[in-house]
Image 1 (tube, one colour):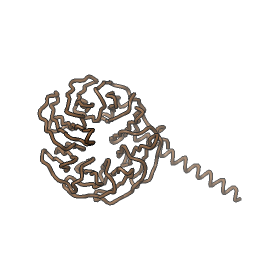
Image 2 (cartoon, rainbow, N blue to C red):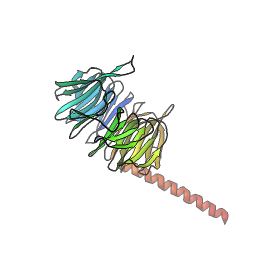
Image 3 (cartoon, rainbow, N blue to C red):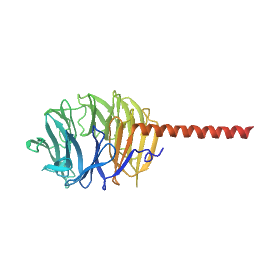
Image 4 (cartoon, helix red, strand yellow):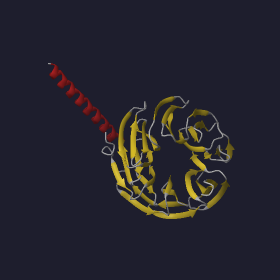
Length: 341
């Protein structure tokens, strides 16, 4: 099945897509490499557009506010109008909303040393007032805010900060990524370890963990080697697939796994069922980001395209493909019977 032909909506941001978010009302917000920020309603009609200072890394929705990290700034937008924009020290990276405050992280990269040398966690009010800043040597690579604020750290300290208190994990290796679903929070490490925030080692892989995506029953880890591995919450492997580097992944539509890969001159989009069976794949522009809600999944690409799939339409296309395949098999069987007779 051609995944592009099965898309419910295709839009163009006009620049490489660097972040994407599906809102509760099924509207879509996308940010670009050069600071473009646009919102479409659930039917695909453009609602507003704003121009931020630089590449948009993260998108956070708080009531009617859209807060983004844009280059060196945290910027707040309402209905397409920039309400405030505050510079950080170094690049603005991650965002969260916790205890009524906007939490942002920043990092400074030292070209001479080839590493991140200084980072900070910033707290802002919804009006943009700086409440507090905590500086540290470690770069935060993951941040989650639900009942508690969790920040996964790189070298030298590594481990996680949970509500301002540092905790060691099951390995001293730097945190590279993390993911959560319901009460489950998993952390990926540079040495291939996947651990829980309680310190339990879930799995050990052969290469660095680039990303993790969780659902009710397990998770999928994308590795630096290009392998993607699906496991249950105990770490038992369910399926795996080897290919080019997976740049983005998400679960959608009854736990189908959607994965975007970078190949030499193009990209690849793959969809697998819960057993790892490939049910659709399409050569496409390089996928950069993805997101999903219950009935919709969206990907953003290097060529500026945004593709969104809707569950009912996607399932109809899958069923049509299956029916066409069965029809061709039946026709071929009939021809073979005729030749034998």
